[in-house]
Length: 247
Image (cartoon, rainbow, N blue to C red; front, side):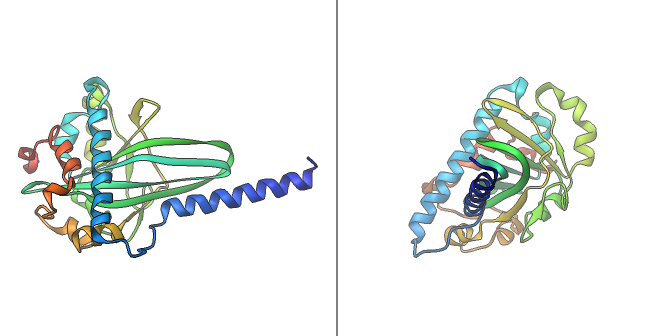
């Protein structure tokens, strides 16, 4: 292939990838989907996030330290975030957030995350991300229209397993602690540059409220328990019981 044709192929591939990533991180239009379908979609997201959190916490020596969970004000899991790259790269995924309230962990609130990059790269990977929001100021970022990890909100790689004691300074100073799991490996990750924003088409369909309204309430969102929505907060409660609320 001559240099000119090669440039055209690379440009076309980059354009296709950029469109695919944009579709991944952009909420789908409300195309007449009824509320029941949205509730099922939300329940599936909550269940998926709960399974990821359970799997991570099953190996105590390599999981998130319990004392950090006891102090966290909110926890987010973004399961199977897709990262695709071919010269121009990007990643995007859907996440679930539960906030600690006086009544325990709140029903799931839905978010999206996405980022882009540029450089000599190629491949597609799927990674689970976990974010611990360690103070009220960090939770406030979840109530914005969007925010950027590491730019708007301070973020640091969280300690793992028996590193809890070594993470005291991290606990005291970081707004958000971040972790990743890919190909079975789990570790703290300083996740910068990811844009997080509410998936309010889903929140409105399920709760008739925005993420900001839901996260502002000091109570459960009163979702239908039979819909499977509580799967994620129930998973968190197994490792950070509601009795830790006063931390």
